[in-house]
Image (cartoon, rainbow, N blue to C red; front, top):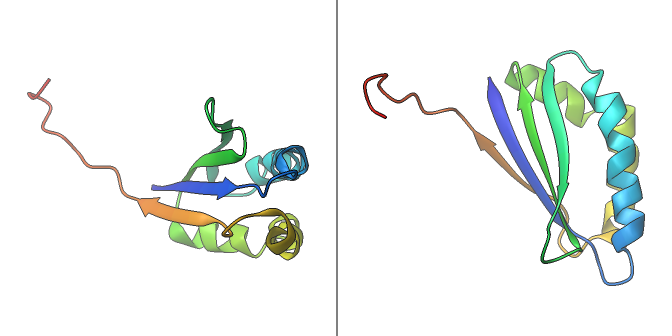
Length: 101
């Protein structure tokens, strides 16, 4: 399993437009093969900051997602709407010994 944390910051005045664009990505992405979860969050203290918490079965599934029509279309709009593009971080779960609580 691969965990992704993707963070974006909307430019001033684009907060609600970015929210609409990101919300539109959720349903088609959740339907993709290999998507375990794809959850959108908005900061409680900075309304221009959004975060996706995602889990994928494999890196290949994530790579296919990055080439999907809905994500490609969003990619063409980012420069106009986002401060610095998308910050993407990939994680592997760290197993902890079962006797440690």
